[in-house]
Image (cartoon, rainbow, N blue to C red; front, side):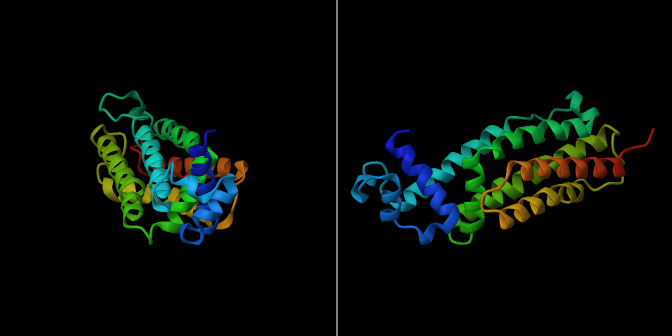
Length: 204
């Protein structure tokens, strides 16, 4: 790693453990093994490091958005569980990176201290996924896969609230999240998705 990458990683590690406000540039420099003044060759301020971290994570979400395209002729729509599994694997690959897990924890710590981070959380973590799943459920209703009396917006909220709850529970419980806990997270969310789809599926 070059020096800027070291500053990025050390800052993220400290921010996610202590909170942004509790970490100084001097502490970051000491952990990296450089002088405090050397940080300014790469970042103009501590806030600039924080914004770089979230710019990185935003790009990760942008990539994830492209992982699944919804179209009416997508064969996966005939098998909602498989459709969910495909998306789940994309999210799993992202969350299994230690850096991304630390950013998740940092978001939960900092979203009430930064308007930009709060907007990111509301848009990327809450709003956009709900729009995605509401659109999917609407298509499934139109295709006759799930019952026509279902409310797609309500289904999206019922579906999405469970993994969000599990993720919050995990982040509140573990400083360093074990891999087996993450595996269990994805197993539970897939079981929940299967249960939800089965309860609203049009029976043959």
